[in-house]
Length: 554
Image (spheres, one colour):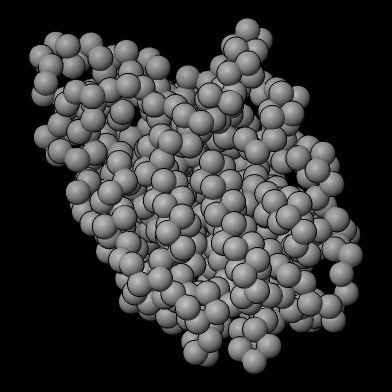
C-alpha cells in the first residue's frame, strides 16, 4: 500500500480526497507550488471513476483527444490514444501513466476512505477522520471525489428476495461470460445501460431490458484514430486546448450561428442527417443555436431522432417504447451507443416499459410487474448515481457552526462558483455542484478548478492569511446566477439526475452551471483580478456583487 511520507500527528497543508483525474492534478499542482499534500483514496489504486466502472462497453462519451490533461505538453505528445472514444481500460492506463510519470503515487494512501471531517476553529485546521481509525489534520481540505462516484441506492422492490446473480454497472465484479446462457434482466437505460446492453445481448440466452425513461441514444461512431489524424492533433494541441478552454462544453465547437427555423425544412433535414453521421457532442443537438432554448426548435431535432429509432427498430411497438417522448432532446444527458437500437431486433432481446408496468416485487428467480412475471437468472442494475452531492455527503463534513454539509444544503445546494460553500472555511470542491462539470468535458473543468483554487490559497499564503471562506452574499449571488442561467434553457423543463430527481428526497436543485466553460473561466479570472469578491480572507471581503461581473463577460 502506498502512502504519503507524513505521519498521523503532522499537520499538512492540504488533504485531498480521491485519486482520479481531480486528485492527481491536485497533488501535482499543489506540491509543485511547495504545499505539503496528503491524499486519501478509498480504492486500491488510482483512477477514480475509471477504476470502478468496468462494466462491459464502458467508455468515455467525450472524445479521447480532449478528455485528457492539457497541463503538460510533453505528456500530450508522448501519449497516443487508439480510438475516438477511449474504452475504460485505456483511460485507466492513461491515469496510471500520469501517476507514474509525475511520481504522484507517493502522495496517496490507498484503500483508505475519509469518513468524517470537522473544522477546528481554534486552530484553523480540518480534523479528518479515516476509516482506519486515524485522524489527520490539515490547513485545507479539498474534495476531488468526483460527481458520479457514489452509486444511488438500489430502489428495486423485492430485490432482497432474488437469489440469482446480481451485479451493478457502477461496481461491476464479474466477467461478461458469467452471463452466458442465462436469462438476464437489465434494469435501467442510462449511459451505462446503453453501453452494456448490446454486449450482454450477445452472450445471454435471453435479455429483458426494463426501461424507466427512454433516452436519446446517438450512434457513437467510434473508430480507431488514424496516425495522420493523431499527428495533426499533436501538432496543433496548444491551439486546440485554448479553443476548448473558451468553448461552451470544453471541446472545440462547430461555428453555428443560425436557428432551426432560419432554414427550410429540407435544408434542416439535410443538416440533421449530416450531423447524425458526424455524431458526438457536435452532432444533431448542436446543429442550431436554439435547440436548448426553444421548445419548437428542439422538437425538430427530437422528431428527427424519433424517426431514426422507428427506422432502425423493426417491431413498431418496441420502437414506440424506445422513442423518448417525455423530455426535449438534450434536456437530460443524451447517450452515445454502439448498436443500441439495433440490439432490440435480436430474437433474444425484449423490452419492458416500467412506465406501463412498474416492478411490484422480485422473487427468488423472477421479476414481477403489474402485468406479468419474468423469469431471470441474473439481474444487472444500471440505475445511476447520487450525483455530485452524494460523494460530498459521504465525507460527513462539519462546518464552523457545527452543521453538517447535508444539513446546510437541506433545502438545496448552495455554493460559490461550485468551488466553495459558506460556513465551511478552507474547504474546496473540484468539479462540485453548480460548477460547469455537469455539462462539460470534465477534465478541462477539473484543471481550471484546481488552478483557480491553487491561485486563491497561494494569494492567501502570500498575504499571511490562514482563513479562506465564501461569504453568504457571494454564495447567494452565484446560486442566483446558476438558476437564472438554467431558467433560459430546456434543462429547466425536465426532471433528471441533473436536478437530483433520481434520488428520493433529494432537493430539486439544478446541479450545474450551463453558461459555458469559457464564460465560467473568464468569470473566475475576473473575480481573481478584482480581489476575490464573494470570498472572505482572514475576515476581510470585497463587497462587490457577482451579478454585474457575470453580465459583463461575454
